[in-house]
Length: 109
Image (cartoon, rainbow, N blue to C red; front, side, top):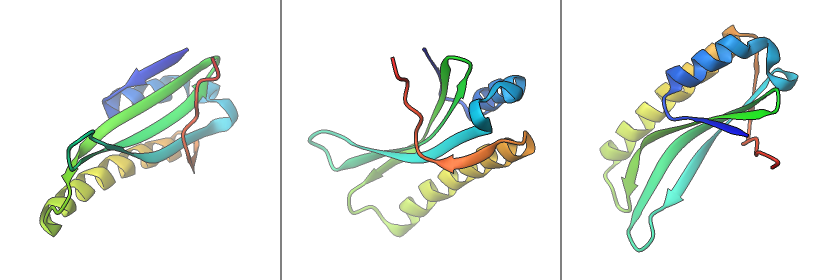
């Protein structure tokens, strides 16, 4: 089963409650870029996953959307928000004694 969160704080609260049950004490974090069909837009999300018991617990936090040809300032604002979310998740994982690694853990069902 997959448990999905969109809010980093809710995901981190779940990790905090279940830190001792996180499989191999590993949380995987990566960026997800989804191209909008027929539009020059790319949606950017931070994805974090961990296996807790038989469940894959997943955070998919939308950071924003970038339009092809956007200005450096627009891309910079999205990057700053994305890095803030990434830092929050990484710091809390480390505080909980969890190892942060790249990638996405997929549900095997």
